[in-house]
Image (cartoon, rainbow, N blue to C red; front, side):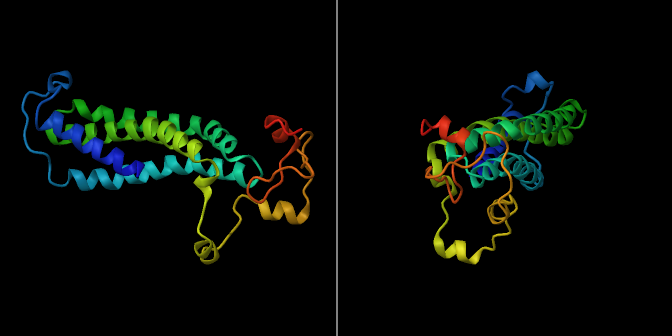
Length: 201
């Protein structure tokens, strides 16, 4: 859903500038015309790859915190805090690279550079680091809900190591040992620090 939002906004901005001439003077564009026929396909491929990279950087940290016992909303904050530097740096690099093509002599190159720069800017800083965490915070535990029939089909490879941690009773750092009788978040017990955060200890 976030990718579709970014893609449609990018299409609209590209048409507005290069076909309708809105703000064309800002980038020194003196003649407008139809959009390249292959530009939409190019934008879909590149923007989808970058959007999923940014999504993975953020949501994998959220998921890891959640399966290790953090409450759902706290897990969103931890994942965002862990991944925001990577997404910010990657987004700025890609926007700078693509933005450099906006001032090329060829209108074709300009439209490609503008579309990619605008799309990455919108997707990384608005969709991935603002809308997606806000939506997951509002959903809480429901963000990680999975139908039971689908949960049985999908293999659980335990990337985060939560089941391994439970099976081998790995030692907890100071202040992180589980609290007996604490309300579990997911399948994991609350830690003392998380229980204190929620006012249960």
